[in-house]
Length: 232
Image (cartoon, rainbow, N blue to C red; front, side, top):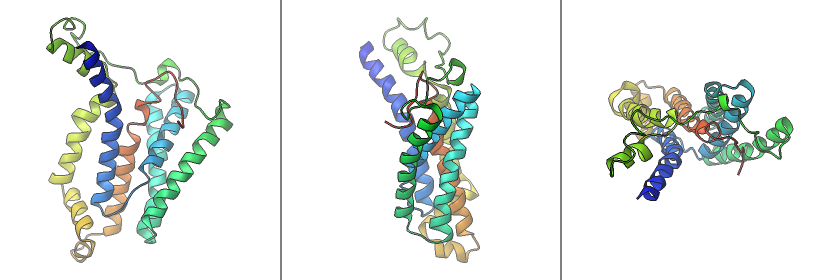
């Protein structure tokens, strides 16, 4: 039973970046932009996050650096595909190729450890949070294991994702003016433009938030473990 809950615990950790990547893709697709560059953005964000956390000994600065890296690539994608109506697939593929090539090169030049980021300092990582009474309830059948093994012991980013980001994204998409315009632009951009909605502005904004979602899980891997690799 304990092994089963350990497996579920690992599933939650691994699924969190995938859920956030799905949210990032949702923003892009809802705006009518095909974004296959999520992998490149996440890779660039992971490297920037690990590098900044290593230098500053601050995981929050690492998170900010990762977001800046992802947003920079997103704006390049938006400039090519939205402003100049370039091929969105080629633009996304180019970003993935650049990110997969430049991150190990920068890591090798900066840290000289074979393209990997070095071991992060203890104060440069997001640590696991043990919820109240987790140890006391550990021996309680089923409920105690669920609470102590599955719910407790995750990074603060995991809790923020589950309890804040996912509900917030749902609310923004279906309950706000921006969400209405986002869906309108994605479903019929010509009708939205006729209604006075700036299609380009909405798509730029959507790609910005998509990049933020893609970069958010970056520190979950490099900043919660003793070492991080910029490329597998």
